[in-house]
Image 1 (cartoon, protein in one colour):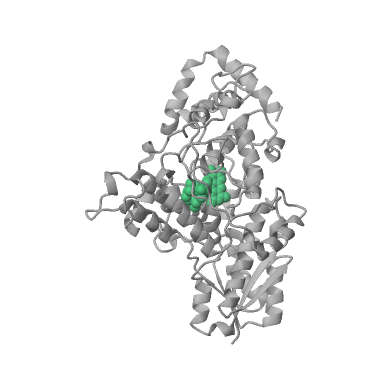
Image 2: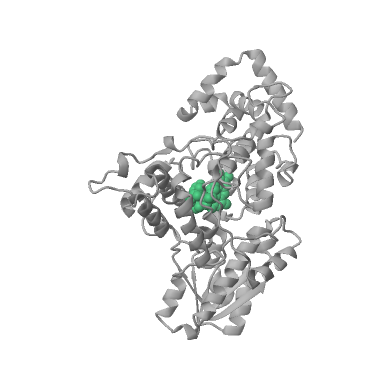
Length: 505
Ligand SMILES: Cc1cc2nc3c(=O)[nH]c(=O)nc-3n(C[C@H](O)[C@H](O)[C@H](O)COP(=O)(O)OP(=O)(O)OC[C@H]3O[C@@H](n4cnc5c(N)ncnc54)[C@H](O)[C@@H]3O)c2cc1C
């Protein structure tokens, strides 16, 4: 029987389960691997060219690596995935097509429900192994409307995988969470170590030409320098461990106009493609702490991002799909403002962060959450539109990670199923954590008035508008309490100025 293995573009794993399964039945020389670049998928949205370049270059490098290992690789460019598979089956006539369950809800449905009949071939879908929850699910039968806290999810994961746990079962250092130590502003003039770059080889140069020809794409890939192989991704991670992990914690929430990614790891592009896997990464970080070369609050913070947030987000996606796509708790209907595609706005924080993503295809977490999503919640931007904007531009964007982060965490549009409160803040927070306000046309201290930062006007407007609901949320209590400083006249001014500002978007 002829065997084919179908590898999806974000499943570039060292140990791919479908290959491992096929190898129990036949040697590499008798296994055909099919990989498909779908024209439709790469044109569904105006994607950033760096995002497309990464996916396509990493895929082509992976195919080359498999060929070197003795497999026959059918690397196809097709209109759609289904067309690519049809063409493959017509030529190779597999008796069985093995694959791993997709990370994308719709594609996974297709794999399980339609692929066999559509391709007239026995399609075997193996469980997805890219996440730790495939080995241990802290809440295997979640109740539909129950709010699950990331913190308890994370503790269960830490215990199960024995990460930063002492012999008596207590968390290393006595605490589960060192967040309080991780809120420092970057000192003026502080220069963060550079992120390693990788010169494009011939495969990547060809990919850059291909993405330049994609007329629907935005941004430039001409200066593309991301890692595109497992070895390069590992080198990038080793560099993070050696030079940035130690100060990852303290400056995790800091933002600056001077440097793009500070002490962040920039590992999401590689992890989401399968080039790096979570467990060895967090174990390597913990080894740094045990060896005395990285502080505990940094290492615990990094472990929490991966074993806590990343896994929780994946878990929330599968728990809430397909309904997650249409959540709109705050009934936000405004389109994404035009300046989100240009960065041309007088608000310095938004200008810096948007121009950064248009240039690099990346913003770090706090820029995404506390500048971009904060603005979108306060301004009432339609969640589905915001999601598409993020999906288009970010180098690490995939369906499973975008919906829970944007609809859930960022916009609180799921009514609190992912995060227990809306992450909203006035200009005070942005000023505290960044240098953005210094060079801004607006005054971050003024609550309203001609020069007041729009974040302030919109923040108070949001509190006024949703006062009753926010008051009922224990985590929003202190914010709502501050409304007592605004008398009726001031409330009316804020409401009016917010309307005027929103009319300009
Ligand atoms: C609105 C919004 C959109 C986002 N979109 C994406 C996205 O498309 N793809 C993506 O991978 N992450 C997304 N995130 C999560 C997070 O911002 C990125 O994972 C992080 O900025 C990637 O940079 P890094 O690798 O330097 O992360 P670090 O700060 O170094 O963190 C280490 C790792 O933790 C993981 N991680 C941390 N937080 C999250 C999270 N909330 N969800 C998933 N993984 C997490 C990532 O794998 C990351 O590489 C989004 C967050 C928000 C608020």
